[in-house]
Picture 1 (tube, helix red, strand yellow):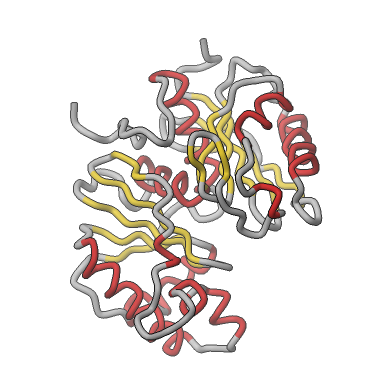
Picture 2 (cartoon, rainbow, N blue to C red; picture 1 turned 135 degrees about the vertical axis):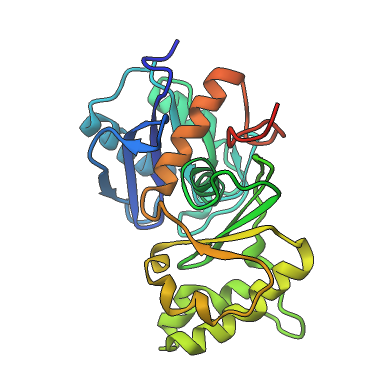
Length: 273
């Protein structure tokens, strides 16, 4: 039984920082300050576990009755991490969910970081109340994606790794925000790279809405108007907090319904019954 019907903890593990907070899932607001610690150098499992423990201790929310969700930068299937983005290769093929549950002495809900950001935007942000297919993209070091159809999360879409026709490297290498920084592109030059990516997604999936997240989304007015698309495209609302909020939301869904990230349950809490 949970401490509150609408309260859960979200932990967002990234390549540079590990963030967490207690979340009121009635409206997606944070009930505590957002706690952040650096991701340990090398990001090996034991070191990351220690940093997560530090976040939970600082939050003073160690009660196992409060649902806990953890977002992680990897493909996650049945609690196992099948890839590693900006963390140690040790995580590839690793039983991560069981590792955290054993290390923390409690049940958790464990999911891909872009997927939980998508859930946060569906429940409390730019995609709230939107039916059909929503594609969230996070533009940063890479390109993370989340697909949600009528409130149902389709996990581990990894659409940043779509191959560019006639090129060896994928769209992520070509069009992520890191490419803009690496090659000193201006907004117009970067938008010219984003254009074929979003046009390709549009052709493949005919989405009803694009939501663009990542820290750069706070500058959405500088590049989104430069894109020529048939699909509505809007900036995300919950930029730095999306992983925390989404992880907490999925933790509560799992607690209440026995939901796991590889099912077709209504993880976003929006589908009609």
